[in-house]
Amino acid sequence: MGLSISVGLLYDQARNDAEGLDYHRRAFARLSQALMAEGISWHESEVTDPPRAHTFSGGFPYGYLTQLRRILVLANLGEPVTPALAVSQHQYDHDCEKIQDETSMFASHLLCHSDSAGYYVPVDFADPLFLPAEAKVEGAGMVGSSQRLLAELSGIAPSIGIGLDDKGVPSDPEETGPAVGPATDGPFETERFAWHALYQACRASITGGHAIVFH
Image 1: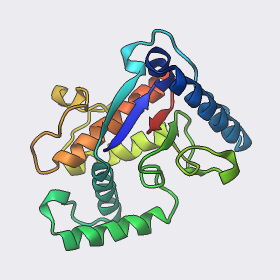
Image 2: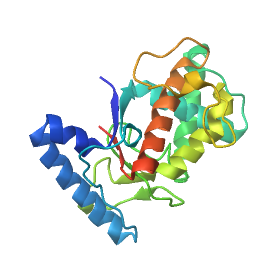
Image 3: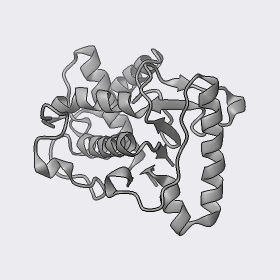
Image 4: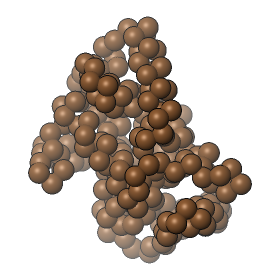
């Protein structure tokens, strides 16, 4: 089991899962209503034939997300950034405690989000949203900004050996391919794999105006 990530989810559901389409329509309606109460106007549009850049489907094991969050925390704290696979279990557990501490600051869009459900929407707002339980928004009501998530990913890219050009695009052409296969070899293989999946989801979300959906 692992985390699935989709952008343009209704497009896929309309073609493959009529029951799922109805479920996610209702879920998006609840999300839009809850966001409106926060002063944010956005809704998930349905598309019939979107350009490829407007959709994304991928994912990775849940542990990859924690490992990527660890990179962000170490970088933010100014500590040496090391691959998760290269440290002892004791050190990794200690670093995970730092993730919890940083998450409690309620400032990071990468950290303040459910591991397995919920949304990032293509609206630029400063801090992650914590919507009330009565709104019944997936992911315990934690909603992030696709733009802010992309900024956080761009900030940590050099720490895991990903070079970006002046437009924030990976400078290596091989770095722009779909993150749907197994992680590639290298000291930060799992962190880089998670980074690429989220990066591509952010770009598709911002370009097409669709939410990133964790499911």
